Length: 294
Image (cartoon, rainbow, N blue to C red; front, side):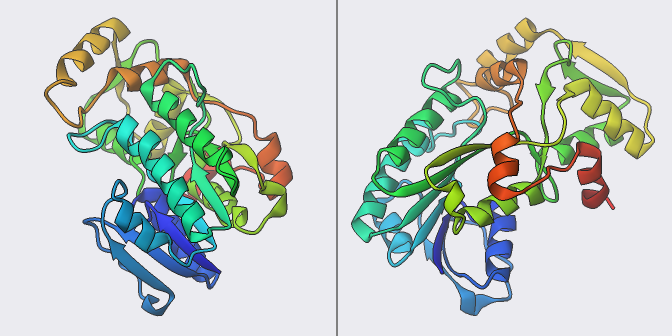
């Protein structure tokens, strides 16, 4: 199958590209700065350019039967904003896909996405979802929880923090919930979405086996690393003030008010559709760590 991947050089995209190549698909990837270390060069082509550029989108999508849209932002930069990249960029991609006769769009969204969400991150994800749903093109939308695995930014960051300091900062009480999903489970759902008829025109939450408080996640990692560390609790209001002072000057800011809001809300979902449609029994956090950290 001829497949185009947007966002194929990131953490999730890199795992997906390797899986799609193993499944013998022909790939075209949009690339910006990062090079791909892939040996099966006869199975993929690259198109240089930025997601926001119409001509680049048309070049990478042309000839594709299926398009994976993995492009997203967790914090705005000087050139990439939630409005321009997530909302308007997706609407532009939908126009290109219609023009090029794409059969299906597979979009990586996020749990918590809704029209009147408390954050611009989720609001613009909602606009992106709606553009795809109303496109007239078949689609599958996946909404994952927090993703971990080789090359991630979550467990890797926490591991570095635990190893390097006697203190582990915790914003608020640390009792907000996550449902960490192992990268291989997400990739299985993404890979199946291209051909699984049961996934057509569905919005599916992709989550791990259990709901864990942030402090529970920290404790599991500390035990794995055999490190005793003291949790240093930082008040939410203080951190919100800190984030607000950084956002106008640092692009991307290391911490944003949107991120704090999302953290406080938690990030959990329902695995029922995931299990039924993809026949995936999600790994627990610790079983995923067994594979990731072995």
